[in-house]
Figure: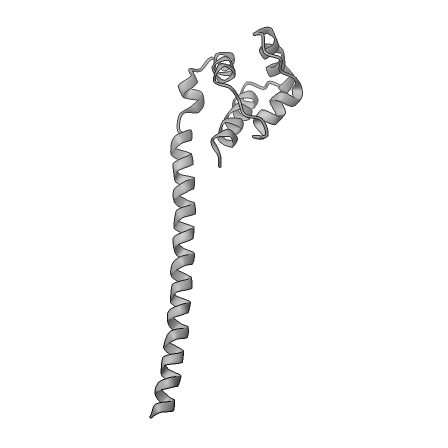
Length: 116
């Protein structure tokens, strides 16, 4: 997941934990001076729209948590996702190399039989 997607999921989880609708979030953000609409909340939660640092700080205040609480662990989750992609790439490379080895071994065996 991307940091934007992770933040969006956190926003949605916190909103639901407070039994708030997207409209409740919009009302707070508008009262705080942000031009949010229901689509803003929806797009932020679904990672279509990035959130500014100021907006993130306001959202943290809305839920009564620190900004660090709202974003804690996102860097670890992003790193784990990147590690997983690198591992998958390495697995494919090993598989491809093994196939190439098998094909080369088969050609070698065939040539050895022909020269015997």
